[in-house]
Length: 197
Image (tube, rainbow, N blue to C red):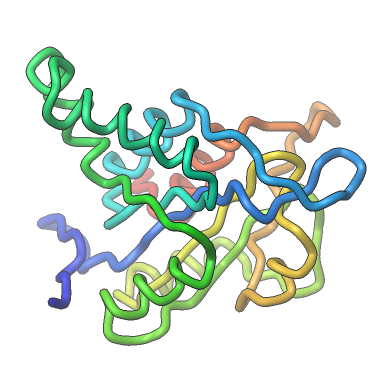
């Protein structure tokens, strides 16, 4: 079944998904690892995603214990006490889905939209294969399916980055410090591609 995307009265249909990648990512030595899912990332990125109108937030991890933790969190807020205690949190976390790996992620998104989405990645480092935020915004608001990958740990592996359609520019301020949390980076990226002001 094809989902129609999220539509607001004053903008076109959005076909934008996010993925929080926990494997394969790098550690500080550049080695390939799997990182741990954090409760705070799930909540904050889902809330940002709901605010900006994304369709789905995928959590990519092959680890059974991490998948079980995500399901426990979702169960609490979807069907447990949290569902009645905070319906707005239930609404935001309804966006979250679990994926075993990137191959499953890409297949699910392509099946949902009935075409391959443009796959963009984020990185704290400048890259040659960059797509500017204005260009990404124009394509997304035109209704083209897009999937934006956010890495955890010290970022996605070079192999993952080499396999995407483009990389969004790094988020750089005037402070010379470039170690944002992934939830902060996700909120900034969403504001740049979908913010109304």
